[in-house]
Length: 271
Length: 191
Image (cartoon, each protein chain N blue to C red):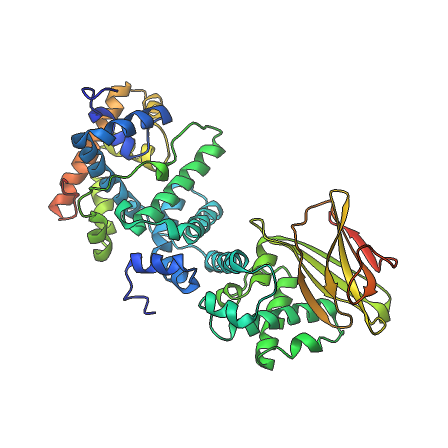
């Protein structure tokens, strides 16, 4: 298209998005240097922008907002979370969260672990919960999460990325053990490339020992974190997980081991 | 933050700071029109909801790249909704090779956007009536282009008319629409 070949006949179609990529490229190149055609295209575009108003009005379900807020909240936290565990107050100020948010986040982890751990103690995490009321609310939310109830309230979902991850990501729920040695582990892979998380409630082990979580990913075994016994805990893994990976726990000295030194308490392939 | 006192651009600035309350405000302000547009195009509630969610998420992720001189915030959001809706429509029809609407370059020297007036007056019914009063062939051509995602070539095949006729109908239809909206003081004034 030369300067002499103006875009008049294509301007309307272009503004409505009804041209081929080749035509769009031609028109785009032409209007970059031809002000009269550019003005015409812009005027048609303004009209095209009015067309959404011509649609019969419809209202999305409240779930859309819940999911959106959950995903955005989760992304906000993931995108800015430092690699090491920072203080929750620093996180709160960075994201303009309400002061209660970090407590809620921790409470939610405790609640999640409580739910998955059944009767196991969760003292360490629970102590950080701002109040019994918050903890109770979070327990209810996580219980709903466990029932795969996607109708979580926006306020709850928006404020905590575990729930968000459960709603939007892949979840593997594993449990086992005899009554006194019951364990429960939930592996969550949030969407958009965030690192995976493990929520676990694990039985009593000797003092000075901890559980070490392992991930066999593409044939290589990685240590993915240390977990305390007899209470709920959540750790962020240093990588993503995918189907076919194997998650396992062994009992190790609290400083951790480079490779498992005890039989696995459990091992589970993510299917 | 008072939801009613903030402009779209102020909301986007807050979004760029990852403020979830700003996202909620933007959603409350535009989810209805966004959903109406998506549903009008894809004709399926589930898909329309996915599109709306994705569009707001895209704005959330890219708010720091927003530039006021490239158009109004709502136009940007609705362009994303439109693009994704048409994309969904085209992918379900297994056709491809189309231009993403929100990737079309915008001019920097536009006249004040008539959207603002339309929006503030909540005069959607005026636009509906204006579109409905266009000659049938023109209205149909515009709807096939904008709401159904067909190219002018495809429209000519669908309607069984020469390509030049379709181009003429799209152009005449938009000009007529402008004249009708001008009578209501809603038209797009020439730059």
